[in-house]
Amino acid sequence: MTYRLYNRTGSGGFVVEAALVLADVEFELIEHESKPGTPLPQEFRETNPWGQFPTLILPDGTTMTESTAILIHLAACYPEKQLAPAPGTTAHAIFLRWLIFASVNAYEGILRTGYPTRFTSDPNAVEATQSAAIARTGEALEVLESAIGEGPFLLGNTLCVADPFIAMLFIWFRGEIDTPRLTALTQSVRNHPVVGPVWRRHFGDR
Image (cartoon, rainbow, N blue to C red; front, side, top):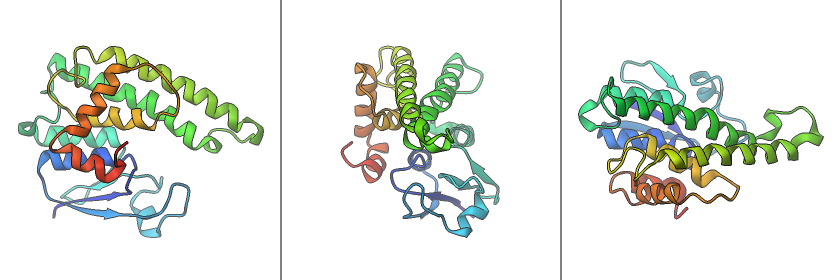
């Protein structure tokens, strides 16, 4: 059995698809056309009760959700592909720190911006929830900006799976911040010979 990836174009599942392509492994891609907020097929709900993309079925039939968990798992499965630094190294500690930081802080803010009614039951607070989320996401992205160093990627000249994840969050951000390193990282992800085609399929020229 190969991997099976449940995904939707333009969703956070982009990063898992990119990681599978970087790992050069066979996978079955099952794409749903439903837009955010619309009902999902019961088949998918049975696979992922939380109703979010991506969901990855491993070759042994185990179900994985949560993009960052999947990225860490795939990097561990294919160390020869260098999807992340070797576990136990300082570089791996840095990789884990900023991948989890981006997921917990920047991605959370993106969700609050796009789905404010999930985070407030007060219809009069929707706009304030979005505004606060945009501000907080901007602060998180500025922290990531300072973490990139010489670049162009998070860990220097070599792409790891944290890079497409961070780039994805950056283009989803609705605010305005001065982040030349994040801009350069995102451009490098777009131009990457392996990840670039996956990026364009999901996000076009963004």
